[in-house]
Structures are given as structure tokens and as C-alpha cells.
Length: 114
Length: 114
Image: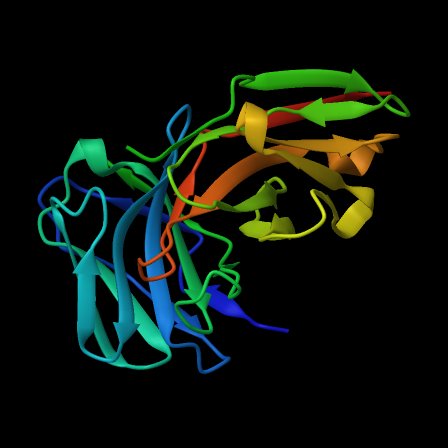
């Protein structure tokens, strides 16, 4: 089974801090994604990566950046955390870019910015 | 613009009763459609998918969904709900030509009464 592991289940950070959310997948998947989940808004794509060192903006990239130095690891970075970034963050991976390649999700990181 | 609508934010059913969760999509090309489930404290898990062919698709956990092109719908059904089905359910459409990008609906939270 594919395993997508997010390093932290809960995080509490202060406004202005630099925050790193880490995600690791163990199935040599090409694609990795970061989503943000908020009540009533569903999942919104922040960034995705289809190869090492490659990244593309999703629908809500403002205030975020990403890093993919190794195929198995995809990091989401909040350069200067703000209270409106309090949310649940979900990492996902997929084998490739075809529609027949389902997303596999981690269990999420609930980030609170105070 | 492509979109996915789940008109029911919250649904409560009794254990053993039948269930139908609604999903409507707006997409010009042939849609590739998915249903995901998120149990409390977990990431999302793929329930089923529709690409082409038979418009009634079977998924895991006894769920099925029917694609109706004329109604732009992909409703999820289960004939007899179990208490363990309490979760949030997300409908999603894959954007063809994009890098495996999914557009998610806002989700339907299912509560199951004993």
C-alpha cells in the first residue's frame, strides 16, 4: 500500500514565523500535491510538483512556497505565517499525471497560527 | 469555469437506511469523476471513479455511483448505511490535459443515527 506520511499531526505557530510542513511518500510517485482544507470550501490546491525540483502553482499559492529536492519528499513553506493560514493541510501523491492515477493522501497537518 | 457542486453540506441518516449524496459538475469535455471519503482524523481515500463505459460504477465499502450526462450529475449511493460510514464525502473531477489536477466539491458531512 502507498504510504504518504506528514511529519506533524498538529502544529501551533506564531504570526510571522517561518513554517515547514513535510510530506514523504514511499511509492516512487512522480506527482505530489499540497492541498488546504477549510470548512465549507472543500480542498483547494496550493502547489503541486510533477518531478524533482519542478513545481507549479495551484489555485491559492499566495503566501506559500514549496521545495522538492528528492522525489519522495515535498515540503510546504509558509514564509511568514499569518492567522488566515490556520487550516488543515493535506499532502497527496500520484503515480503519474494520467486521470487513471488516483491521489493517495496523508492524514493531514492541522496548523494553528496565533 | 470547471466546478463541482455538492449541494448538501450535512446529511443525517439512520443506520440501515439508504443513502444518496448529490454531486453536479460543470465541465465542457468528457469528465473523469471521483468520490473520496474522509473519516475523522484521516486523509482522503478513493471510493470509486468513472472514466467511461458503464454509467453505474461500483466502489469499495458497498458504495456505487451513477453518471448521468444529461443531468451533469454523479451521485453516490449506498443501499444500507452502517455507523462506520459516518465521514465527509468529496466529489471531484479531473481536468484533462492538466497535470492530474482534481477539482473538489465542498464536501458533504454524513452523520449516522443508531
